[in-house]
Image (tube, rainbow over all chains, first blue to last red; front, side, top):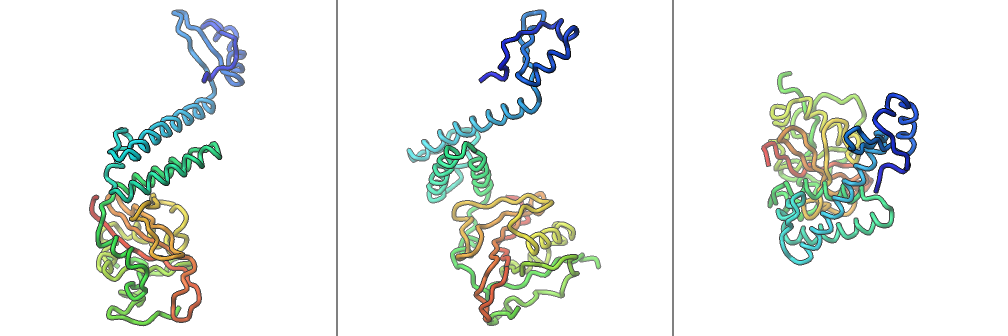
Length: 160
Length: 131
């Protein structure tokens, strides 16, 4: 994918002589400028650059998530550097993660929006950073029993 | 709100003297598991009064929205399992550099003696060390 859709190629000297035209071309379709040593440069608006960088981030995330999912499906550890935290999850949570990632892939395909997949992976990464606190897990298993809870008053300054 | 049947630790009764009142009307009744009562009481000393009150104000007003100050994350998998139907998944609130509070909320809990619905927040885990 190119950020420049114009066929026009400017020279370095055009920046002085026709600066306004170069800027307008950069704004509308991206401008390609060849420096005096032959290096090809591209000038685009910051908005276009941010969107391109965002798409690249999403593409990298999708490829990494797909590879990790295949490794999980095969029953092995995840070797993708950015997703190694998955290995801290137990088998049950890994299976849940794999199911949710597949659902998020489907959603991303339907909506052309991979943001929910990114949010899901962020939530799982935070979850994986936590210990499997057995007392807390037992509390969840017990369900909600009002008799086990007391009112938590708004904290006060201990010095007053 | 009518408290439910009492147990040995007087459930739902204030664990200590009433705190200063917030500048808003709380929408949620904030509860803490009785085994976390002591650490809840030490929260101002451990993380600072302002941070402790920001947390309480957040969950008492609108626990389902991202807070204004500190980051939150919804937990996945078994550590995010709702306590019962109607409860949210566990929300992980970063109250300080190393301090975390995990809670769930239910906007329409109706298990009280009177059977009418109440909005409640339940604090399930407080970790003020590093993990």
